[in-house]
Length: 238
Image 1 (cartoon, rainbow, N blue to C red):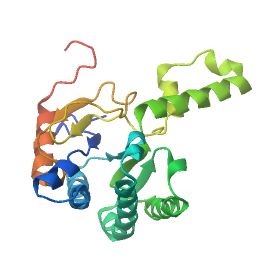
Image 2: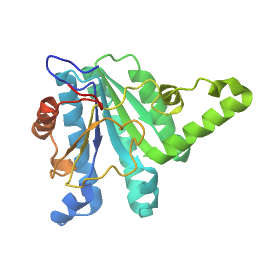
Image 3: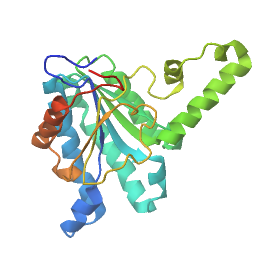
Image 4: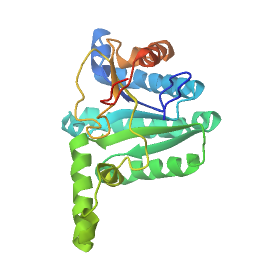
């Protein structure tokens, strides 16, 4: 539940967009934008802790992103490794629990090992759960959930007898994570791009022209202020 006093969202999710364009505008390669985007991740994480937000999720790499040039994909995976190695102290200092969700079977054993280590090291941190969606897509998530449900029904046909919508949540990779209250997309694009298709059914959306490498604490505060002005009715009448 969101706070009724300050209207602080419990879960904020961000589609981090615009790294490549930001770099090109500066005459740089796309990877330069990705590198500077890491600073924005640190800024919004720290601000989320300061604001009392409990879940921050970031769309870092989609299933479709595997189709990008191999050089860029390789750089992104390397950058993820460096970020994991470099953020341990900041995560511990700010009480941040680190989680990666997605089709991790497509990641290298080395990267998966680093992810598992950081998840284990930070699992008891109480202030914020930072979720990085890596090799993720909404359609993939729903499909893998449907497969799990089908297997469960084969083993026990009664699973389907009283199945409710909320029961399906338990088969998604986000099981146990509250649906996002606010989804932010940077860089001016106004689409969901196959992200949290099930979980974002009643999320508030905030689109900004600010590109991700420039999306720091002040821009984040503006998004949170806009959220606080919204009247969320969930299909009801107030």
